[in-house]
Image 1 (cartoon, one colour):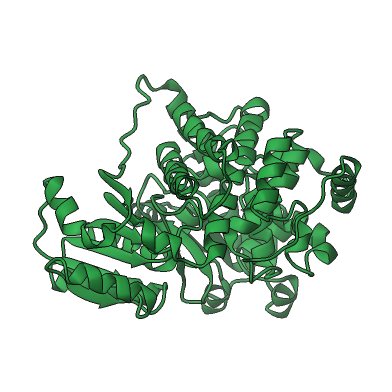
Image 2 (image 1 turned 180 degrees about the vertical axis):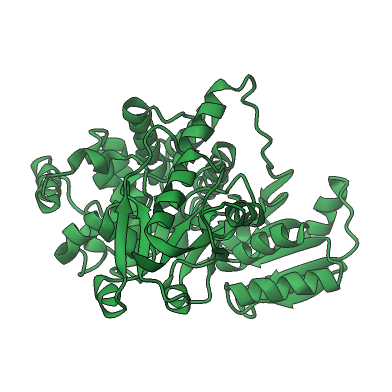
Length: 500
């Protein structure tokens, strides 16, 4: 019998399956210690819990099998394994052991060195939190969901100096406004706003937890009621995150457009271990885009923004595939918004990013993509197999110099091939934007690590069914070689990887 047994879990909508896991764990040892995953952590890899972390902790603490419980806010469990002298970690056998160890950031060597066993107990079939949520959704009478959408959306030249007028025209009045920017290019544009309206300036250096907390405290102490974010994705993500935590509105003025994250309720922030995590943010109530600013941004960001749209097609194809094979529900409006945004660009008469009409359409389409995710309450409309492969590449740092939108645009061509949905329009679109048709050309390291990328992709979003699930058991290099043969057979020439 073990001395100290350790269980980690979310324990949302506490049910019989949770109770059975804790009961079985307690039978294995003298003392049962439970780590309850925090809200931000769960929102990143699963979904926002229905019960708060405090409520879930209180439920676990009052379970008769549990001796001690606490909230854990990171994936790495080593600190607590050592603090509580754990000699057995217990989990349901629905997880593969290797994947689970990777999830909690421990290795076989670490377990051996610290004399800790992993015990996988039989999973309780027929009951799960996901199943309960699905049942509630399927049986409720009304499917209407309140979704926060931007009230202000302006795209035009010279908008950066018109924000005060735009707020007045829409009958919005704020007492204490903070203009948040970086300290270089974005500050130059922030100064234009500061010269045109009464507001204070706040400069952020990083997009990490410490920066978020410092800005939150500033907002509370100064009674800020509107944050105006000026800059690229990292600055705007900090603003959306603080807006949620401080419960105040935010208006965004992007200086670059490179992906669909602008109006999404997600903020990508660095945690205390300098690891990138996706956390809940507040959807902006206003977006003001100055075409002059976007047009003057480095060309590679415009390429990335246009390339990112290709992923909408492969992602919605995967969504349909999951509906067919797994019964995953589809939000029709979100599906249509995402897909129509992509086809609006693919069928546009000009693919020249210097063309005002095409560039404006790229901006509109990125906004539509963000709205589709807000409506769906998930990234499903714009993130499928192509994003799983892209996240795997990022996880192993195999293409660090490639912008996200450019990368997923290239990978989407391969995923469309797997889905048997690759047509001439998509190929021509990628070629005209100088996006590689074969994603291994993004970096010299990719072709040598195709199997590793594929294996890792399956761990990026557990439970997200995509076309990649249909090729399990087949050597990934062989599948990729067939794709390259397809391109050669139809005399499709690959584009040269280059930012202009």
